[in-house]
Length: 79
Image 1: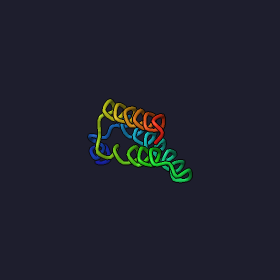
Image 2: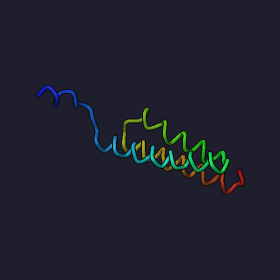
Image 3: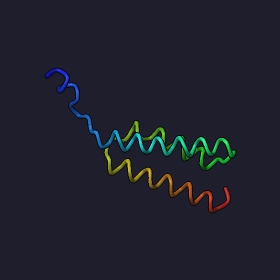
């Protein structure tokens, strides 16, 4: 029973989503570093770091979509 009480406040959905977002961020950062592309590197680092500070699934998903949209807009603008 002691192990169950240490999991109070743990949200498996938020954990899995943060791992997925962090993985996408890692791929974006690795590509940006290899291709010397600043928008992908910045978006990648942002996607890897922000899930540590956001615990809600909806907020996490919304922020990730916004970061990817900003990256796509920067790429289309020629950055």
